Amino acid sequence: MSDKNELKKVLIFGATGAQGSPVARQLIEKGIAVRAVSRDEEKARKFYGENVETALADLSDLDSLRRAFADVDAAFLHLPFVGNDVRAMPVQLANALRAAKETDLPRLVFSTSGSTMDNLPPVAMVEANRAAERAVLSSDVPSVVLRTTIYLENLLHLALPEMRESGVLSYPPLSPERKVSWTALGRSGDDSDCGDDGGKRDRQIF
Image (tube, rainbow, N blue to C red):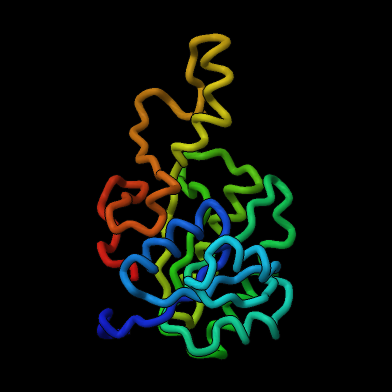
C-alpha cells in the first residue's frame, strides 16, 4: 500500500491468542478497524466485545479464507503452533497465500512464530519455519516477514523450573557467546522489535 494512512481494516489470524491479540489491540488503539479470524466466533466476540468484526475461517478451508481476506487493507498471519508435528503447515500456508492473492491483498505481515536462525539445529519446527518464510517471500503477495527470535515468555514456561532446581539457565540451547534478541508477546504489533541480526525492523509494519 503506497500510503499507510489509507490503512482502514486489518485481518488478524489468532486474534484471541498470544500473538494476534497484542497486534489487534494496538491497531484498535490507533483507530484501525480489525477483523478477527476465529474458528469460534462466539469466543472472539466475548474476547473483544463490539470492538472488532469477526470472521469464521479455518486455514484448511480455502473458501472461508477467501471470505476472510475480502476487502481488507492488510493481514497479520501466523500458523498454529504444533510442536514437532508440522505436516499441516505447508497446506495451511498455501491456502492462506492463495486466498490472499485471489482477493488482491495489499499487504501480508507473516510471523514465523519461531526462530529461523542459521545456527539452530535442523529440527522439524525450525525447518518448517524456514520453508514457510521462503514460501511467503517467493509468493506474489506483497509481504513482510517477521523473524521472531525467542519469546521472553518462554523463560517462565521452559527455563524457570530448571533455574529454580539447578540455578542454571540452559535455554535457549545456544553458546553463551551468541547474542540473541528477544521478542515479547505483548509487543508483537509494536514498531520497535528487532530481527535476528539486532537491526530494527520496518518501523511501521502496518
